[in-house]
Amino acid sequence: MTQAPQQWTSLCSADEVPAGEARRFEPDGFPALAVFNVDGEFHVTDDLCTHGDASLADGWIEGEEVECPFHAGKFCLRTGEATAFPAEIPVQVYRCRVEDGTVQVLPPDPPTAE
Ligand code: FES
Image (cartoon, rainbow, N blue to C red; front, side, top):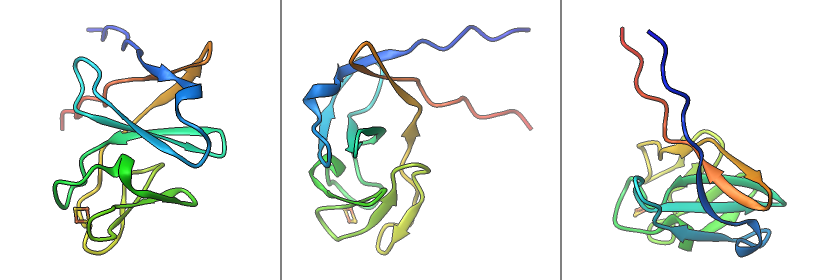
């Protein structure tokens, strides 16, 4: 059985997220997402911190990590790995691209059957 191709979802214009900043978006079919612009390279994660009720789009970008604004937990923007306590659970990251000036994301890969 073949899987249907995944659909890219448009989130925002790339211009809406200046370099070194992040914005929160609520696209249909996704939880709230945070879009980060790291020197022109975009990353998309769930906006909600895995440690508490904080918006990661309100955090601080440090290299390729975001520091949560509540308790200073950190997450890798590439992998979602929690890199600083008290954050311990990874945050969901999404594949993204910029197409015709628009930031687009794919839904997460479904879990593979074992
Ligand atoms: S809410 Fe993000 S580190 Fe606590």
